Image (cartoon, rainbow, N blue to C red; front, side, top):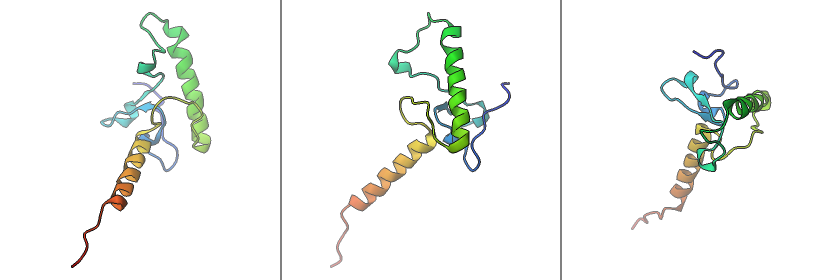
Length: 106
């Protein structure tokens, strides 16, 4: 086991932690999202000491700042959190509900 575990901010959940590879079965076992696999920023021939270790260190730095004020400064590709994805989906659903034609009485 890796300890200490990452923890969400007060009032948040593990799903709210930005740029985390979320494990729904065991949220404490979620992993850091260090690079975009589609961005070709990492190759199997690269040294872990030159990539993964500095990337993890930088991720943890931004994680600590996020704990302080809730702002993710680490950049990244795609949605920052599962919670953000769900919020976007809820916003779309709300917008679509308002756009549906209503049946008229009579």
